[in-house]
Every structure is written in C-alpha cells, then in structure tokens.
Image 1 (cartoon, rainbow, N blue to C red):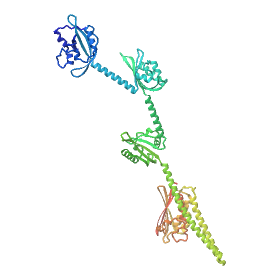
Image 2: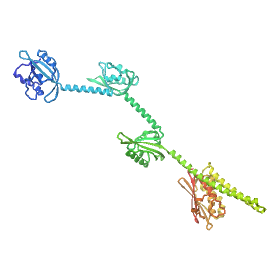
Image 3: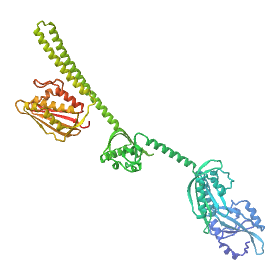
Image 4: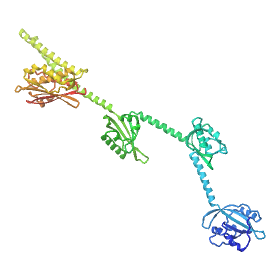
Length: 617
C-alpha cells in the first residue's frame, strides 16, 4: 500500500517519479502528476491540476468509476488496459493500477493512479497473433502441419492441420504409439520408426521423408515429414517437426512421369528421327532412331553435342545456319530433302522438318527436328527410273525391230511371190531353172535374215546372262591370233596396248564378239591408199572400264550417218561384204551389259570406238 504525506515539499519528489503517476482527489480531480505523466498527456510542462480525470480521459471505461469508488473505500482493485493518444499523436497502451491516497491521519483523501506502458507488449502480442493466424492460414493452404513431442512427459501434440491430414477429430489425443500405426506397414513405418529412434538416442534430425500413411478414414495418402530434437541444458527434451500432405503433388508427379514415359515411348518408336536442340544447336533430346543413325549406344553420348561434333563441317555449317534462320524468323522448314554425311562417310537422304520451340513470350528457345530416312525410297526411285529408262529403250528397240522385221520379211515375201509368179507363167525350162536358182538364193537370204533377227531377239530377251571378270589383254591376244590370217591378208597391223592385268566385267562370248566385230570392221573399211593400222588400248574411269579401238581407215561421216550408225542393215561404204548387222549386234550386246559405246570419226582420217564396260554389274 502506497502512503504519501500531503506536504508541499513532496511535490518535487512526486514530479521526479519515473512511472507516470497522478494523484486524484475524492472528486476525481487531478491534483498532482509526475513529469513523465505530463510529458505524455500535456503539451506544456505545467499541468493544470483542476482538470477532472474523466474530463481529461473521456473514453475511460465507465466501470472504472466503480473500481475507483471502491479504492476510495480502501478496497483497490485491478483496472485494466486503456489506449491513449499522447501529446504527439502516438497511440499508446497503458495498464492502470490504483491505490488509496492517505493523509497524515491515515484518512483516504484520494487515489494514486500509476500507468505501465505496455504498448510494445501489446503490439508484440498483436503481431504474434497475426503470425499465428498467418501460420495457420499457410498451414491450411500448403497442408503443412506441426507436431511436438515432450520426451519427459511422453506427450505428443498435433496441430489442427496435422490432425486433418490424419483424418482424426479435433479432440483426438495422439501418442507416439498410435501415431506410428498410421504409417503404412513396411517401408514407411520402418523408416519413420528408425528416424524417431535415431533422433531420441543420437540427436539426429530427419527431413523431407516421403512416406505413406493410412488415415483414420482408411485412405492411403503420401506425406512429407521432418523432425529435429530440442535441448534443455544440453539434454534432449523433445522433438519438433512438420507434417505435410503431398498426396496431390505425388499424384500430379506420377501423372507427369507417366505422361513423360508415354511420350518417350511414342517418340522412341516413331519410324523417324526426332531431336530437340537448344539455341546453341546442342542436342537436348533424341529418340532411338536418331541415336542409331548417329551410331551411339546411349543417348547420353549425344546429349549436349552440336552438329559440328557429329557431322562434317560443311553439313554442320548448313544445319546451323538453317537452325538460326528458323529461330529468328519463327518460320518452320517442312519436308525439305537433305543429304547428310556422318563421320563414317555414309550418305543418307532425309526428308527433314525443323519447327521453332516458343516460350510464353513467343521467343524461340530451340527447335524440334524431325527427319525421315528416305535413302531406301531414293534407291527404289532410282531403280524405278532405270526400269522406266530400260523399258523406254526396249520399247524403242521393239518398235525398231518390228519395223525391221516388217520391212525385211515383206521384201523377201514380195521377192518370193514375184519369182513364184514368174515360175508359174514361164514355159521355157532353162528360164525355169534360172528362176529356181534365184528362189534358192532368196531362200538362203531369208534364212540369213531370220538367223540375224533370232540373234537380236536372243540378246534382248536373255535375262540370265552371266557377267564375269575377264582379262581384256588375254582376250585381245586371242582375237589377234584368231584373225591373224585375215589381218595378214589385208596388210593390217594390230597393236595391243592394253595393260596385261587389265580386267573388265563382261559376258565372255559378248566380249569375244565385240573384239572380233570391231577389229574386222576396222580392216574391212581400211584405206587402200595407206597401210592399215588398228590400235587397242584401255583405261579405268569412274564406274567404267573403257576399251578403245582406233583405226586409220576410211572414217565415217557422223553428221550424215551418226544417228544410223548402229542401225540394223545400215552400211556407210560401198563394200561388197558390208551387211550392216555387225555393229547392230555388238551394240545390243553392250546395252545388255549396261554399257555404252562412243564413236569419233573423220572421213579419210579414221575412226575411234570407245566401249564402256559397267563395273557395277
């Protein structure tokens, strides 16, 4: 109980009281205040003592008057907290206390009121309440609950969020034993049991354990739990931790993983090469087809590499320029036919597409590439073109052959018909005998024509010709020996400059016929004014082995006869042995072996034939 004597010399002491203090008389008028009180509530240093307490503080709780009345009766009671605006306009909170004010005769003459500034405490409490509310809201939003375990009391506490996750009512009282039973039997229960044991006995924390529980509603749920020990005087006093419901996250992750697996399965089993590049043209994803094409066993061998690491410099440079153009213009390249050469030298034809990858701002951050290997299709296309070309050539040959057959057989037929008419009308036996001789000659000519036509048919219809690798020098030597008498009789020198180890791919009988025909033709059409000279030579060029047969004979006017040179029964000199069948047959044999013939000639200078043997047969 505070007792202050009413003496004027005490006023100075009251003013120096460190606590805001006011002396109020029985009429609730403020008689004396401390300087700390005045500094809070009065703008001037001098405080007007005649002010009534309830006039100065009109917002005081009316119940406090009863409390002050009781204080005047010697029964002080707690007053409470009142918020006040000080002289500077700042909101302050004070806790008011009261005590009777005695005179020297122990009579109560008023009330001593003292204030305790609890503004910081109130603000801290408000802030703490806000934080608690915010924490509770965050817990509800994030589904993160809290738990505490007191080792000494063996008491486990769950917050409301933790209880909600377990599916238990708000009045549920958890314990370590029943808490463990919520974890799914097996891995989850064993893991949390071990973590709890090591935390209590070894002081070891655990964090972000992803486990499964079975709720009170018998629902399986994924949770994330963390915990750590708390200490009191160096000893473990308990554990605290968090408990989060991550079932939706796990389900979403599982769906994402499943979708990724589905997409990966789809991409890997597409019959096309698929890849994704970043802005530096580095591969960040490839499928199995692309991996196999590059020749890698594992996609990780390719990830992070660019085209310069995988292809020739020229191919890589073209690809990089195209990548940059697609990302800059945002215009995809669709179905472009390209040829790539890998480091093994293998050329592959692709039907390629490049599509820009765009972010949410419409800026390209890479490209998706799709390439269809059309090498086999190109080969088939080439084969088809060859077949069409062959068919076209064969068709032309067939038309030509039909024309020849029609013309020649018609000529023989007309000749026979005319001779038979003469024979029928002729009476003279001598004339009949002459006509019979003419019929015999015509018959032989017809047989020869039929033999020639049959040989042409045989060449063009024989699909089982056997092509072998033949030494050309040896075959030329044999031809020279076989024609030695013929060459000698016509004063012709045959010069064989073919290398001894020079081989060609040909049908043996065709090669013999080609050598014989071209050599004999060179002799037949020699220039009688000079010594006849035939030169044989050979060379390799590209896919062909080339036999050259050159002579210094009469030559051929190619401008006049070039298109008819290899025609059937076409002759270009007045030579009694010329039948016009040799070049035609040899040309058909060369064509049948996928070869070709070229000719150069000048009248009076000689002729040079080049026979090309296809080495890819």
